[in-house]
Amino acid sequence: MAFDSASSTWSLSGLLNTPRGMHTATLLADGRLLVTGGVGASGPLDGSEVFGSQTGQWTVAPALEGKRYSHTAALLKGGKVLVTGGSDGDPMRPLARTEVFNPAANAWKTVQP
Image 1 (tube, rainbow, N blue to C red):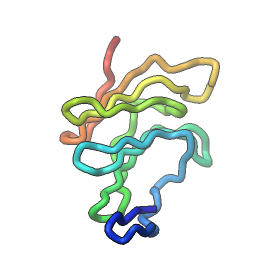
Image 2: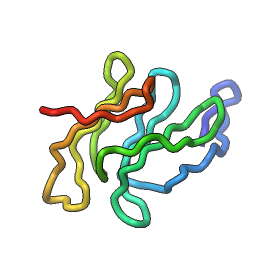
Image 3: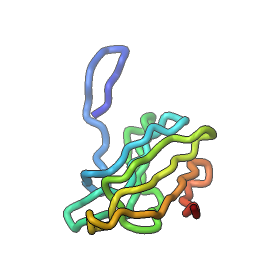
């Protein structure tokens, strides 16, 4: 769904390429929306997608290093997105891996502690 503040109405927008739950959605500095990980019909996901508000469409973005759900994502100064925590399938084994998405490069990088 997309909200038009000028007319105060909601309208349907493009559908995700991969339906998912337990993912994160982060508003990027340029107005696009980054969705990462989550759980789909086949289980945990490593995929990412970006929604362009100008086009109303979802575009497949590079995948995370591994599957991840119930994680946290935060927009950092400079526009990059930090993704950490969550699980890859075993909720009793939290992930220690941290990744950073660079929208300008359209790439993920794993960050070492």
